[in-house]
Amino acid sequence: MEIIHIDMDMFFAAVEIRDNPELGDKPLIIGAKPTERGVVSTCNYVAREFGIRSGMSIKEAYRLCPHGVYMHPDGRKYIEASRIVRKIWGDYTDLIECISLDEGFLDVTGSVQLFGGALNIAQEIKRRVREDTGLTCSAGIGYSKTSAKLASEEKKPDGLFQILNADELRELIIDRSIRIIYGIGAKTEEKLNKFGIKTVRDIYNNRDLVLRILGNYGQQLIDLADGIDHRKVTLPEPNLSLGKETTFQQDVTDRDFLRDILRLLARKLSFNIRLDELFATTVTLKITFGDMKKITRSKTANATDSGADIYKAAAELLGKVEPHPIRLIGISLSGFTNSPNTQMTLLDNAAEIKKSAKIGSVTTHLQRQYGLEAIKSASELKSQNRFKKKK
Image (tube, rainbow, N blue to C red):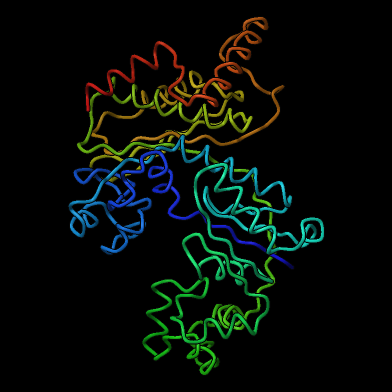
């Protein structure tokens, strides 16, 4: 196999710096504001020099870097950049396993002859990503998924590296921390460290001990350390669910405000599934109360991509929930279908349904071109204005 792993460099932060170059030399942290609940989604390399990492609480990040620039993520911009990047990938192979918005594996085994080899493909992808998005990515070329992933991490940012066989892989990682091996997280590292196994070399020298400590899982890790990885690049299964949620800085009891939030969440979800030409049959309301008790309530009906329908179902479910202070509220969609013939909106008249579908198509086109805020209904505008006043 010939596999390329592409990883966009500090993706969210890079998009913000591209759009505002003055942020480039400042510690930039994407996730939440210092006074809010939340975690770091990503940060630039300047911020990482202060010890900030993805997944860290915003409060901890602020303790480490109080002078940093803290921003909320702008999902619309990141999704659009990701779509451009993935389209570029698709010009070189159909076998693409997207790990996230900014990362994926490409199996180019069947197309290397057409495009002059894996190295040339990786170089072309890097060039086109820079030209079409103004962003950089790191590319790794390998004989397996593990080797390609390790290669892409070797020369970040904006790097290009190859690991062409198991001997090269073992030579590269032999004196690295065991955390370099896919599947070894903090807990597994702690278990192995107790027995003096801290580097990959220690794994090579203590194979039987690793097996006694971790059993069958230990054999998997030994194989990966040896450069043995038969996993194939697989096309992802369709999303089982898609959700949006809001966490409040103070617990909320105002039902009108909660309905405004649901309307805005429904609007974002509708936009996302319309971009993918999907329709959802199940709407699920997710709530975390002030005492941290969590509940979900679901409703299944005719498939829809309408924000109004999604909101109506979620608001109906909220109306059946006992009034208690709410810390988090969200909506998720599931039961997806891509057949327009199954779509039935709240309208009964066939002519009205056709008219509604046409309006939806025009709305999607405008929002795809100019962003989600380009067009909104009167009720959505009212909810947005009330939300801004309430903040």
